[in-house]
Image 1 (tube, rainbow, N blue to C red):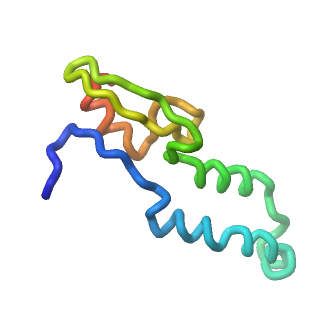
Image 2 (cartoon, helix red, strand yellow):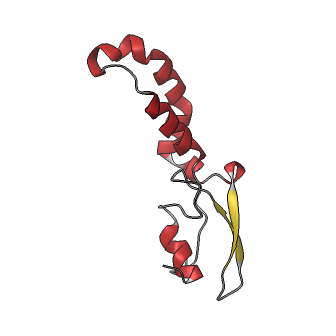
Length: 104
């Protein structure tokens, strides 16, 4: 059944293939990087660890959310924080939310 346009659908990033790859294999990759890849790609930048950690928390309710209410229809929903800046929007869901809430 197709959902109507403009209705917010909560994302479940933890169910995506990309998320599962990072969740299941990043730790092993990181532990083996120096031995297997450093000679070819150079030293491991700590920024990568920080970004992966942010990615794995992005859009997951247990890591923080905002309770928002549509001024037009009155519907309330929980909007997970994004990895961007803990703002009340996530790039992947921003269009759906702003359409429903009538914001720019």
